View 1 (cartoon, rainbow, N blue to C red):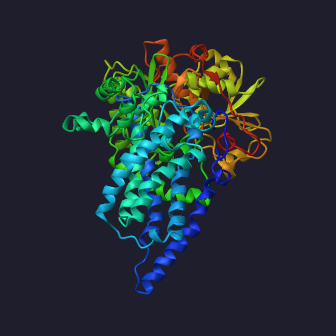
View 2: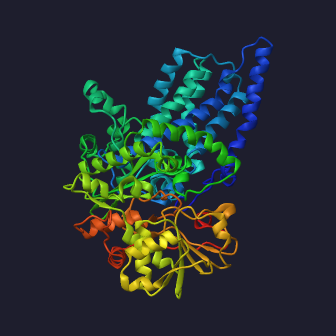
View 3: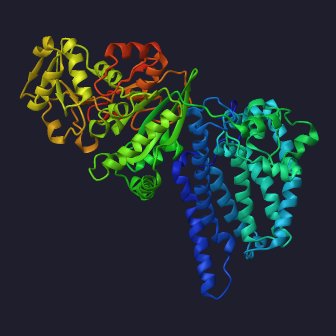
Length: 637
């Protein structure tokens, strides 16, 4: 909201949520019926009203494409303009970017219904292009310039325009984030060419919709946080610098506030002396760009088809909330989009792609996503192909100069790469440190074990985390009970001889604390006594939904709260809440900050207490979302 919200700040349908699209439904149904009825009578149907709904849908898809491409380019960072942090507050503030698209559709329907001149327009009229171009370059740009300058007067700025300028680091949709009253004035300006075309008989369906797409294109272009306008355009036609702005030109308006007021055409800033003198220099520098080598790369992968849309490159509203499964009708409808996209990612994605770029002081970190999802990692048929993609990502990380690579989720599976050791064996001189995060993950699990617990039940398969966890529990004088004979024998061989007395083979499930790995079944959960704490040591949460015990307590997967100094964190990591990251991801950051010389992969362990103390020293905080009985932490978030 603006700092001092004025009248008509809120959009009329603010409280309707996504149900606001129902406002368009009756108009769309009526226009379709009217067109079909006209055709049945042998008359020409009204194309303008018929195309309102398809145009709305196209603009939604078009906007999302801009969002995804812009975020991908920003993650690459080479041509980034402003390096400041973008946070969850901005994502929430810009969630209603589709309001102006809905308003456009409603206004088109109303004008078409009430104004005879807007009915029966031809598909194309070339004269409309000339009228639109002249009126946009003249009255629209001129009036916008002076209205924009007025909005920067403290009275209007505090009540309206400060809402838009709260976003210093801009994204494409920042361009349409305005209070309702301010947006209504813009619509009045953009209506000048449209209504003039109709009044002069030069209007057409194609030109009316093309003007909307032009406005979208220029709006989104100017609010990208990276430079993409090629210099060749200005070299071939020098006057273009007065007729077309660039992202770097408009970014100065968001950082300097009192310069570069023009809408899309900088001519008026040149004319009235409000052009920022650094505009050309900033354009040159950002267009040339500079490669930023990441210090830390976190390698993750897709989990479910829905996780693709949950990525920072996907839907902002989904990415800013924890990933959770749902059986609702909306989720089923979304799955129709998810699965084809996930299939395409698997087919065409031969290597990991950058999803997110962050910074913590001088440390640069990136998240790379392997375009494969969990079912492919666990499939024998796909295992070899997955292994090749992961190994290629490790090589790419070293080539990029990364000091540390963390293996998230199933990228560190023993069957896949022996907890990352395979890459060190194949290339002993590898400079990038491979970190599986075991030490910090175990430390996070120990923090979630309720105080005063004297014994725990350890369930799951033999793995590195289980062995280190059992050793750490025994060192803390906590009795470790194991019901699986094979796991018990394997752990006996791995923990120190003097601690083996605290490791017991048991047939009882009476322990009040269960440390569980992947695949805890509903049948196993039923054996727990009321009040049992389920503490996962896996990267995947305990199955929730109908499988959750209503009388038990569910803890989160091992995770830590990121320090406030960790910038540009505005997407949730899988099922974890905001500003919380998995212990495995945090481990790589701590490893790089401490400049530890060795790998933590294969059998190598940094040290549980050592990793925990270092993490706390660098500002990470313990995290444990203890869900209410009957919920899992993912449900509670």
